[in-house]
Image (cartoon, rainbow, N blue to C red; front, side):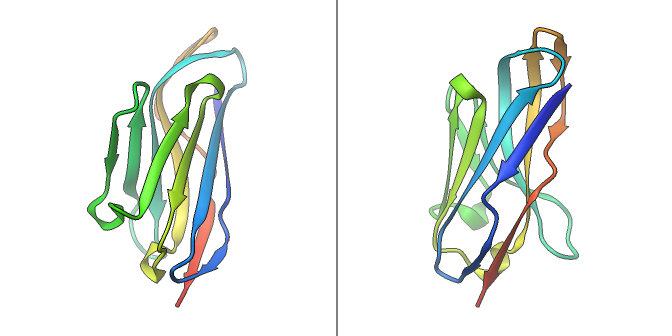
Length: 124
């Protein structure tokens, strides 16, 4: 099994910044590699959407709505992904979820792993 633990969500004013962190842990074995780690978000009353993704070799992708404002990064050594969010807007208000796919551990490979979410609220 794989556990993803997010942190960093908070209440912030429009124009402000936040940094989200997600750390992956193997609960039944040690993590060997993680193919892709992503950030999704679910605004109030809306569906979950992809915000940003990063591969093992550092390839990144962003939703159009966050390009130029959000930066995703990753530390493979400790299986951690970050999302630096700047110039936050009220429409960025959402629960942000960490997602990791194809996590290889000493106990097996696990797909489609989700964290519990961290709430970001941007006031106008």
